[in-house]
Amino acid sequence: MNDRQKEYFRVKLLSWKDEILKESKLTLQALQEENVNHPDLADRASSETDRAIELRARDRQRKLIAKIDAALQRIEDNTYGYCEETGEPISLKRLEARPIATLSVEAQERHEKREKVYRDE
Image 1: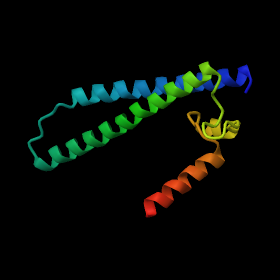
Image 2 (image 1 turned 90 degrees about the horizontal axis):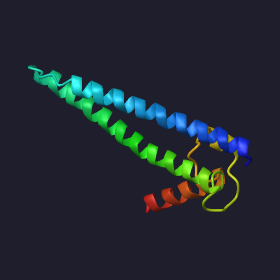
Image 3 (image 1 turned 30 degrees about the horizontal axis):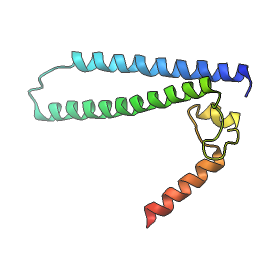
Image 4 (image 1 turned 60 degrees about the horizontal axis):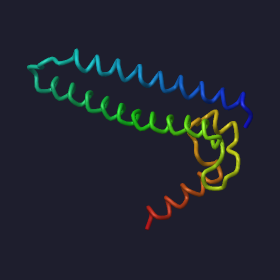
C-alpha cells in the first residue's frame, strides 16, 4: 500500500470517527433533555425501551471507535492493509467496504466457518 492510499484510509477513518462522536454527543443531549416523567405507563415503557435501544447502539459505536483507533495505529505502524492471520495484503475493495478489516476475505471466511462449526457442536 502506497502513502497516498494510507492517507486516504487515515482520512476516511478519522472522518468516520468524528461522525460517530458527533452522533454520540447528540444522543447524550437528547437523553438529558428527554428527562420527562410520563404519567402513562405505556408511554414510560416505550420511552425506556427507546432509551435502551439507543444506549445499546452507542455501546456498539464505542466498540467501533476502538477498532477505528486500532486501524489508525496500524497505519502508523505500517501494518495496515495486511491480514493478521496470513500476512498477505487485504484487497483495497475490502478495505474500502470495511476500513477496519484485519483479515483478508479468505481468512475471514475461514474464521466464520470455524465459528459456525464450534457453534453447531
